[in-house]
Length: 175
Ligand SMILES: [Zn+2]
Image (cartoon, rainbow, N blue to C red; front, side, top):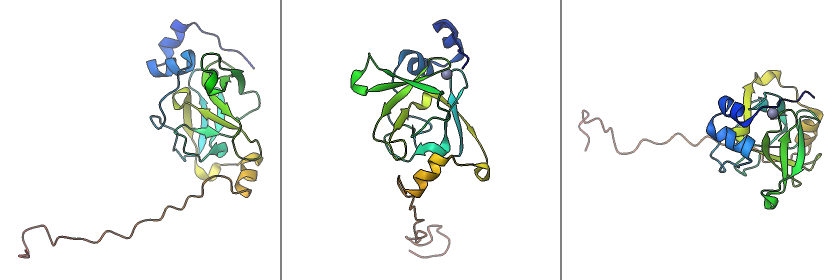
């Protein structure tokens, strides 16, 4: 894979302050502060620094940790793992293989078949949406669907709220 190498000054020109602090200073954004944690849109998540494709929405885990999570990268060489010396309690850091951006952390409590959970900062990602019917799920994603891993969406629309309190308009004479 080609490497993208820039100085901090160059990255600061390309990124906003929060993106810079996460990707080049290994900060972690607050949970649920972010854009992609609960997104169910179909598409491709790329590195906000170098635009290399990193994770596909078909490999997103519906887990409510507050960060977007994936069980496998878009390609085997897209990311690499490193011990996070600054935050050893946070476990293994996930790094963009192209530009060395800090993306998030890797945990070993993900669903089958990988058993992995890549917990990624939204600020480290850019997203390109695609049409839902153009989705071609990876074999891994299909396997997970088959195993019914993850939370089943059971949202039911509420009964249409009954109108209370009369007309409220003041013109019909009801009190
Ligand atoms: Zn990158």
